[in-house]
Length: 391
Ligand code: SAH
Ligand code: SF4
Image (tube, rainbow, N blue to C red; front, side, top):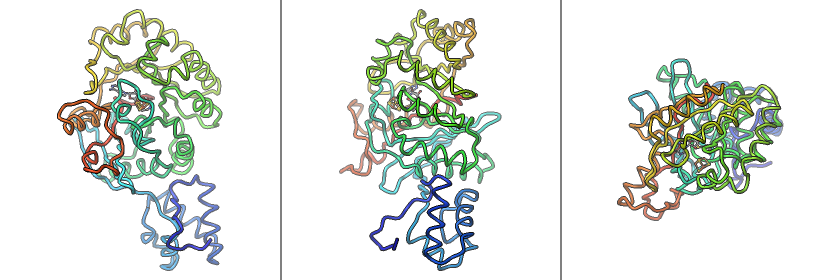
């Protein structure tokens, strides 16, 4: 493999540990360098969070230059950092092609949770979600997913707020619609960067083949299901994917995941006034949660501008919580974090776009980089979540 200016460089952060070793060993063998050089580079990348080959000071200058010609380590710039009065911090990351994505750091008393994005935008089109309204931009690479953890973690550590203790895939995008990148990203976070599998939660709107695939992995990653309704017809009004993978099929896949053992399952239930908060739905939800041993997060809906839906009234939320508790289901009400910086679920994209569009609701294009006017460049997508789902 000869590197020329035309050879695309390989992102070392997108490689799982075994691949990383193989690629680096081959590289150094071709250059007649000792094989311990591969270990040196892996340690710089995985243990020390270094992205700049020139900072790898135990390598000869010529080797640093040769690495730079053939590889890179994904490290997006923070285009914007917003810190909420409650400590929640949102990073807007600019990718190499100009695409903008977000991650959100959520501190609680005993943990620092990172909510990260798996796609730029989302193709699922859920009616209550600002990311859904924004449409699909592109898939993120494994390196771009892992880089959010590395760069947000660096930001937190430098300010005495780190390290990140938990990761949830609840930012922009549907992680199980980007399995090609999400699977390696899970492996890199877990066995490369040393974050325990039980501290990593994948949230899905119900991509059944993806849930089964996750169940077949040996690591005990957590699974959050965005349920939002215990009834098929109602769920289909909120989540178009329900028609492709109806609730009975989804529950089968969740049971398979549970039977794989030792894994935490959470139901996310966004409570929308007079949409999915009828009292008779609560016992149905309880039965489903008991069936698979799921913890339930009740999340008051965050209004978005494209429709006039409102959050459920507090007494409805409390009724759901009490019904679940009486049935023996562990449940919590999650108040959105970081509201003042638009870091709560789906909000930032919504608010920014409304400003851009004179209050007129229309489906915006998700891509920022290709925008002729550049207007969308300041309208990034966001769907962060309200609190740690795996607590
Ligand atoms: N695509 C995945 C993960 C990202 S969405 C999924 O849907 O699970 C993260 C969470 O935010 C989901 O539970 C989603 O239902 C919720 N969410 C999206 N928009 C919301 C809103 N406007 N108010 C409250 N929760 C919202
Ligand atoms: Fe996509 Fe999740 Fe939003 Fe649905 S709720 S549109 S799957 S990000």
